[in-house]
Image (cartoon, rainbow, N blue to C red; front, top):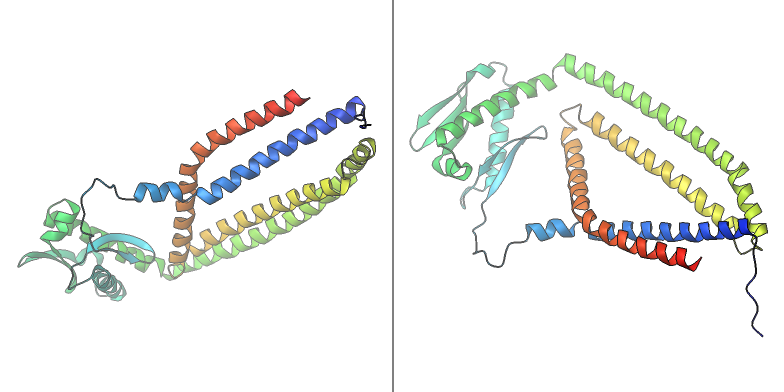
Length: 302
């Protein structure tokens, strides 16, 4: 003879229904996070994929000129003179001019030569701009050379300013202050986390134990408490990771020697966030449909 379904009091029945609904919501959130994690990079790859109808295009050899992590401008290469070598030479010329105290920023000028416009810092040649460079940018060669001149002059001024004694002392003081603030905040998070865990043990765990007794041991208080404590630890870990990231990004960006690492980290995070944002909308609609269906099943079963 089949056993009859146990009849629970109304408070226990409501608690069980709430737990079931919460389980469905948590499962839906976990599935949404997993889908976003697995498909974050797919929209970006799909957008960057070349069209089948487009004709074959010759790749353009281009490399950026980077000084202290700052992208100044791109330069074009050729089969006999790769763009990476040209960009490295221009970067070396800019740094050499910045280290030469006899060259002033106002000494930047251009000189017309055979088939190119040469950019000089004093008597030091920075680079030569040819017609192909202007065609690549879609502007006249002389206009492009004037743009390069202004950017090189600004890069030289910033290179010298970032390494000046007053700026280094100010940035070092700011880094020390930021380190002290981070240590204080991490200490406060640790204390607050222990306080919240203790409060949860005194109140939440006791209520879960009472619910377990009323539900005839169908709900395991230890399992529910393990999940709740895991959520608290996850929130604390996420908060610590975000604080450390912003701290490193700010402190590393203060000094020219560590600024490339800061910019690289920021660029990577920005790229991942954009990719996740592109993947979020269609998956969010799917998740909303699944959640509505699950909610209807739960409520109709009650």
